[in-house]
Structures are given as C-alpha cells and as structure tokens.
Length: 442
Image (cartoon, rainbow, N blue to C red; front, side):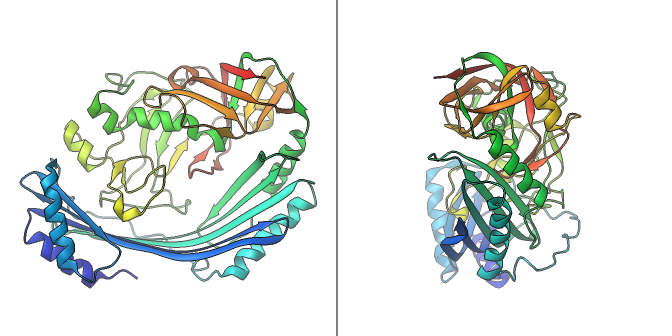
C-alpha cells in the first residue's frame, strides 16, 4: 500500500528547501510461473517498491530515490546535494486537473496464486500439445502495480493496475526459434482458444525449412515485430531528438512522410487495455495522442522537460521506463509511447498472405537494436521468417534478414490488417504488408 503520510512528510521537507517538489511512489507485487511441456520449470514472486524525489530550485533540478522512507530527511538532503550537477529545469510540475474516475476492477488478478497461474498455463499447454508436436513453453504472470504522485503545486493522484499475462511459444525441432503469442488482461482469464489455434496453424505452416534467393520483395511485419519499426519512429518523433537536432522529422510536422494507410497513436486512456492510465509518471493528464495520421507527421512525443525546452505543451508521455529495464524509481521520466497502437486497415491476415506474389512474413526478429535508430535504419535477423510464394506459405527461411529505413519502407504500404493483436512489447498492432523491402538469405 502507498504510504501517503510518508510521501507528504517527504514532500513538505523538500518543499521547504526548494521552489517546487515532487514525490513519486511505485509498488509492484508480482508472481510468475513457467511451464515446459506441462511441467513447472520456474516459480518466482516479489515486490518492487520505492520512492523518487525531484526538486526544482533556481531553475535547477535535483533528484534522489530510496526503497523506503525510513529517513525522509536524508532523501531530501540527497536531492539537494544532487543539484551540484547543475541540471537545468525549465519546467514546472503540473497542477491538479479533473481526471475521469478509475476503471472498475474485479479483483481477480490480485487474488491469483501459483495454483491459478498453473491452471491457466496448463490449459493453454493442453490445447497446443493436442495440435502440435514441438516443445511447448507457457509463462504466466500476475502483477498489481500502484503509482502515486504528489507535488507542491497540489497534485495528488494514484493509479491501480492489475495485469495478468499468458505467454505461449512452440519451438521448431532442434532450434531456439519459435512461434509466440501473448495474451494480457486486467482480470483472471484463459488464453483465448482462437489465438492458440492460430498459433498452431502458423507453427505447422513453418515446419518445412526452405532456402530462398534474396532480393527486394514484399515483407509483412506482424504485431510482435512491429517494435522494430516503431522504435525508430518514436525515436524520431521524440522531443529529445528534436531538441538535439538529430531527428529525420525536423521541419516535417504537418507533412506527409509515410503511406496514407499508416496511423500511429498512443492511447493510455483506452480502458480495454490493462495498462490504461489517465496520467503519466509526472502527473500530466493523458489523452489519445496521434503521432502520424494517414502518413502525416502531426505531433511530437513530449514529457515536461522536453516540452519546456521546445516551447510546447507536454503530451502526457513522460514515463519512468527503459528499453533495458531497471529499477523504476531510479529512472528519470522520458518521452515515450506507453500504450502504442496502429490503426487497423481493411484486409484480413489470410487475404494479405494470399495476395503476396513473393515475399516474407516477419514473425520474430534478432538484433532490433542494430542500425542507426535515430535515422530510422534497421537490419534484423528473421526469427522466424516465413517465405510466401504465389499466396502460399512455403515454410520458414534459413538464416534470413530484412533491412531498410523505416521512413522509406513505410511509404510503400500495400495493406494493413483489419484486426489488432497484443504484442510482446506491450502495444496493440495489426500486421502490415510492405512493398519493395530488401531481403537477404543464405
């Protein structure tokens, strides 16, 4: 539970010695379980908790964090000492605003134990093992996360986020390559059978291993590989890149830079998603925020800091998260997409495949960090990648790669799937079919 009394004490101590102060509290209670071919291989549980303090004085920023509030005075002192780093702070902490009431929660995630996690995992395993012969791995996790923010401008907000997920993978024989799918929910529930059936079908289609000749061809990115493209787009649209002058999107706001079939947004207010939130990690009210609309670059991704540096308003995208993980309270808020989505199109997945003359379906990738991310370049291994010829999946490619520049390949969108899927990286995306992408294979 959040210690509001302790937070208030720390805030008062810090506010007395600064112009503005903010206290951020994070607590996550989680349990996880892994099952391989029906047998439990790992179980873990824990609690991550901590408090972060930010203070502003004379236009400078000071920070400190702690796992507990046994000595709030020391935390306030450490924030003051950190101001010797002369980090500029041209922003102010937000004032209170009207927020929608939090979505109702049924409490089933909070009450889940290891027996429940195993039961849901075992049902998914039984379904898949009846349909495929490969190694079936199921991971299940439940977590309940509470975030509270107070500041000296009167803000006092809290969000409660129960989430469970089931992650299924089926490995191809004698490989570490697999077909994977994830299911997330804010209530305890089973892996949808239609998703597992789709997994089984895709697994069987990829069993033959084929060798192909590389070249430029059609390439379809599926939901679990979409982050390869979105990582580069969000880096280019970030206020950080604009302030540094390194974004390819400089001076292109309001201009068409991608296909009119492509729309990218962030919507933390979508209560159908378990990660829904009406404020970001700085207490700024969130909203549906469109970055690219029908190929037109509309908006930057901004937290308080970079909004102030660029003379703009924050967009509610300031979060204490990192691509590489870490302790939440130790990470400073940065501009990022918390709940990204791509607007669906009009084509079914099957129709998109049947319309491919010669191409590749990117089911998984290796090396998504490769290439100049800020410039939009990518070069990733297929893990796996399926080869399609005359509208039929022939099998998975041995040692294949796709490469290109996100601003170039997304100008040539052939079709966008009509359905959204949970992705391994947290967003909800359709598959996207692109024209004229470089594919190499041994």
